[in-house]
Image (tube, rainbow, N blue to C red; front, side):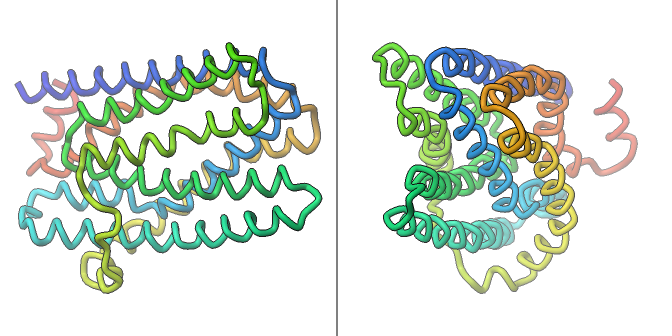
Length: 295
């Protein structure tokens, strides 16, 4: 029965991933038809930077938090609370750095000749803050194995982004800042919808939780995960930045659209990983692991 439920959860998240990619691909087609190559190139370059900063914002703590929270012997609610506070404190430190960067670009934009680029960078950093805090809610739901809510978190942000792109296209408002807001909208939706599901305030952090047993355990487990994830994201997004510099904006848009199609092959493994990570640590012996994997 448990195995059947696991399969259902994997299929549920896999279907959500398919819908998410479909919305993104449809939105990309509309963007290619409705906006200039220059605007599209700038937007996708900003998105590439944003993904790199999001990986920095995670610090490798997301998967580590899920693993630690799902340990069989971690049944103490007070211990869970301490671990959650440590995880949230890591998020706060990174978001504070992004906030300072956003303020810098916001102020600099009023004194710079390239105002559009600097103002867009400020908006991107503010959006990154909401994404980092939104992933806190997402990871908390994952650790609690609330996969139905995770499914909605996967589908709703790209759905609203695509709808906004269609509305802007239909009304003829093919301006850079409208498109930028459409691409940044999922960050805000992720944050507020995640809070609606978890009801966990992002302000309930404590500095001391960074240095207690939970915080140190989370840090030591996360540091290598962060390095691997950061360089993986960097290598996957650096192509966009290189194309932006060395080629045309139209080719940047084509490359991003092709990448969305290529990413489909990873969707099923992502669904398995999301479902399996909080479950595998609950297994008490190798026999249970083999049964979950091959039965």
